[in-house]
Image (cartoon, rainbow, N blue to C red; front, side):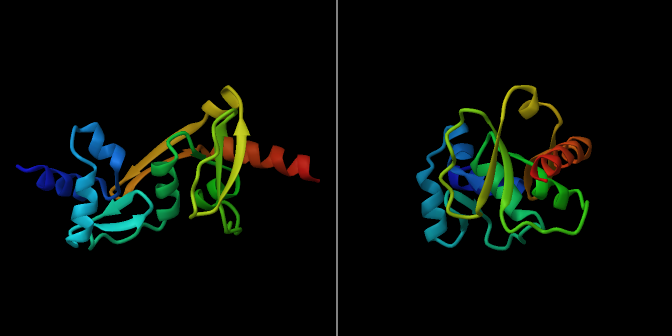
Length: 155
């Protein structure tokens, strides 16, 4: 099996592929560009690729953020919307990052970043994997607790 075949197989199983996924297996990330130019992969976002016939997920922007920002955890309004709590649909993706982390350089989707320290960041993370990708998100309990605390501080 060639590297090209292996990359296409990985794209089929993982749905979203980035250069780090290819590099981690010892393959050349340049093949992603060649496969895109040949029409065998499509560019979903900067540095993210999928097979051309892959249907986008309902939570595509959350999957993309988690793929491109490895320390990001979906939080607050975005987590409430994901867990189907309330009716608000945020126009930006809310993420928590550990205090001191460099801000990610993403053009899209727009991010609202919350900085958390220690257990406030690391506890309550749920990893959800489906056929289209992986989402790191705070649990329903942590989301409700954090949203309640956040709302109290605002007003």
